[in-house]
Length: 241
Image (cartoon, rainbow, N blue to C red; front, side):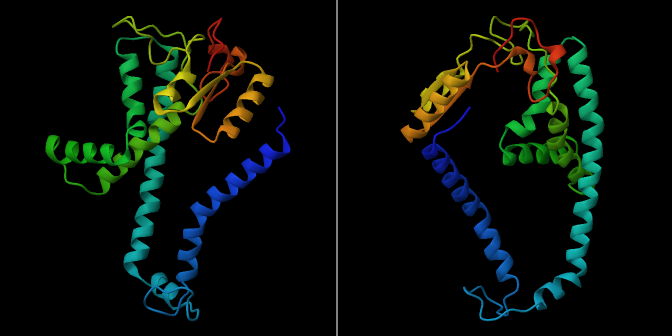
């Protein structure tokens, strides 16, 4: 697929603007940390390493950094262990409640962080009677990390069946599903592409419109399911993602 010179220029400009919006405030903070003034002012009157020296010798700051590293390592270990077990179990076996368990694992990252945080706080303090502390901090972070490990390689075959109702299963890949229609609810335009030419045309039209757009791509069924390349797990006839 090739883009026109105008399309490339528009995309490059958009990327630069997004990066500036993200990193410019961070750059201001870093530069201000060398300011000799005790109050914020721009530009800094002069520069010094005094504040960095204070931070380096601060017992509280060093302790906080140490705790953050410990919590991160422990949460990563827990997430790797549980996420790997969940991925193997849900991809290789069929059992009652499989879809519900998959949904529960994904919910913490699908919901807004504040919602998950308040839910965990109430679960620990109200339901379990556990005071917030080091242990709960590790559990909370691991909760968010498990889903990354769990879904990083793709674990669904795409041929799941909903045994509760006639609605498609949440993990079923449907060739005829029109995901491009979702954006219409928000006033945008949807496009469906099944060839490189159609994708090029859809991208050009979407960029030229300047409005919200969603492109639904029909891909090669042998390309892999979810984010991984588990070709052997793709059901025959499934070619939509």
